[in-house]
Structure formats: structure tokens, C-alpha cells
Length: 252
Image (tube, rainbow, N blue to C red):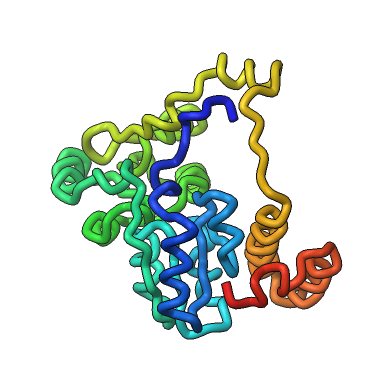
């Protein structure tokens, strides 16, 4: 790691012990964990997801109930259209949590002809105001491909710099007060250079945890492929050594 203190606060809101307690309360539910989680949480999960594929991943799970960790706002967004019973973890991204609907309305009055792009980690009241609800990668693609020239962007402030750089003929404004992830901003180019040069702050994870976490990630990759490839992909995954038994007999 470039810096030991550059951790994700949202990922640290959920622990293995508390997740296991929730799993015991809901033994028939599968755990879907956001990629913004630590390895030991992924090892307790049935499958992982990203903000862009969360809906598809949840719908792919062969159980009526899903425990979704750690982002309550993302789980609420998925629950709007999913038929699954979603049991949310009470976690959140502090950056997106602070983006408020009254700020959105104020900025929209200033830019009435701008499209509002909102990240699904935002609170439901903000999501409901969006023209498009998109992951950060989705925002990048949408801004590039859209004929619109003005956008209000509700996510971490750093993305606006990329959007402006890649789309010089278009205008991007923040959805209110600048929202910064202080943990991300702790990492400097010098930190990255030192990590590469000296290999300092090496991350070591127990092999048993790694193997179980890999299986949850491979499940995500497998269900994200075209339907005709899924059976073959799963067999390839199992043949590489990640068996259902190594992921908790499918009861994660």
C-alpha cells in the first residue's frame, strides 16, 4: 500500500464477526459484497459486485434473500427494481452521504439545461432527482457519448477533473459543495513512487482467505459474461481450484 492510513472508511464499517451474526439470523440469504470491501469480507461472501453491475449480480443469485454489504444506499437503489428481499448493511460512503437534495435543487436552478448524473451510493432523495444514475465509469462513458454539453455531477470531486480533461468541449459542475474523499487524497505521487521503489507496506493475506475471496470475485466475473458462456466459465473457475466447498459450501 502506498500509505497505511489510506483506508476506505466504508469498507471498515463492516466486520467479519458482525457479518457472521447477520448470516446466522438469515441462514437462507446469500451475501453480496461490494468490491469496496476488505478481503476477509469477500471470503464471507457468495459473490461480489460493482456499482455498475450490482443490479445484475443481485438478480443472478439463486436465493430469495440477499444480504448486501456494506453500502445501504446502493442496496436501496438495487431494491427499487429487484424482486429479491434485500437485507441491507447500515454502511455508507461518507462522501456520497453528504451530497444533499437541497444542494442539488440549488445547482439545478443555476444550470436548468444541464443533465444531472448521480452515483448510486448517494442517498435515495438525491438519486430520485437524477437524469441518470451511473457508476463513475458509467459517468465517463455517458459524458463522452452524450450529445449534451452541460452536466451536474454528484460524486467524489476528483472525477470532475477527468471529465473536463477528456471532454474539453463540455461543461461539468459539482452538485453542491465539493465532496472530497480525504483517504484517497492522502496518497501522493511520491507515496506511489516509494511503494514501487522500496515495496514498502506490503499487504499479506492468509491463503485460505484469498482463495475464498477469489471465488466470490470469480462468481461475479462469471455471471457478468454472456449467458451462453456462463456454464463453461463456472466449470473453468472450479477447475482452477476454487470449489464451492472452499467458499463455505455455498452458504456464504
